[in-house]
Image (tube, rainbow, N blue to C red; front, top):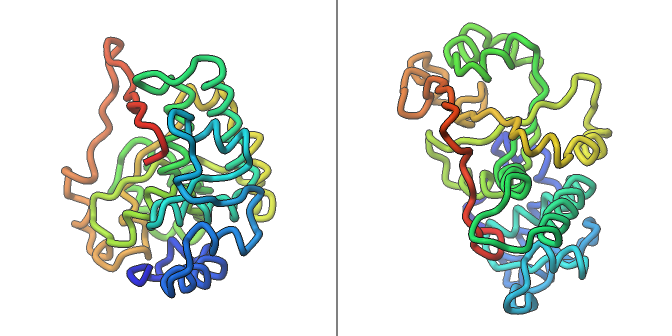
Length: 258
């Protein structure tokens, strides 16, 4: 917890709630207790040991209204996301539980559970002008980040994915998130409800994400002030079209969310 930089721009919306909880955990309070005591989430947080052996993590949450919680940053940020986006997190859990009830737990997650997990772990919500969005989705990084840099004054970002936030505690250039576009008409107050409606099995199955090396966001990391920052093709990769024979990436089933 001591490594979290609460002044980081990606934590601007999370600091007021998260920093006091982190301080309690850092002082020795069990993480599940410190998170539950706040009372801001529609679920409780219980020690990981409360998850029965053999029961799927998402199914337990759906059935009990409790989130098995390990000590550490990953589950800490997951809990904060429950507090900031309760409707969207509940919707993701409902989708996961419904797919488990329909198809069981296999060696890999199906397309809906796969996409729901990508969103849950790695989504960055973005509201952006078309000129920026089009350049980002085409992987025209110089256009998106340099030529259109002034347009970023009109871009709104909300962090969501807790695995991405865990990585950002120790920032490195190649950390990549999955962008999910938010309609222009949606404001911060209506964002959670909009997400809950937008997260459908049909939409998730199409995997409407666009990757972004997140430390390229203007204003989020000092090194990206240099235009050649975006010339690193090992990080800012050109767009590659998937062939018809290629299958979408499938996340292996590994039990509790990792």
